[in-house]
Image (tube, rainbow, N blue to C red):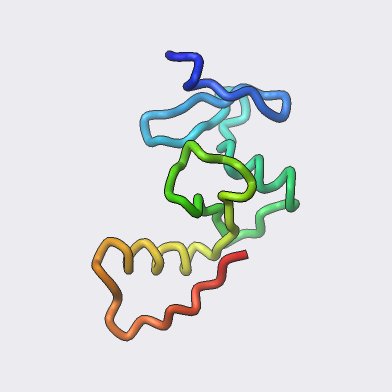
Length: 94
């Protein structure tokens, strides 16, 4: 494992995994979720932390947005299918 594949933050070490996200060996938590919670508080059930620029290694708070799981799925479906027929584009990003 390369040094750049390890991030030390919030008293823990986060390792870059094969799926492209950093997570802790000790707590199993994902770095982007820890960053969000340290800056904004607990993540409510049914919500996820989205990487705005699509780069899962960019865990700067300015690149993170809280979204409902439903809106997140709709957004990625629309991106991957070239648009969603009749889709209302009022996705809520916090």
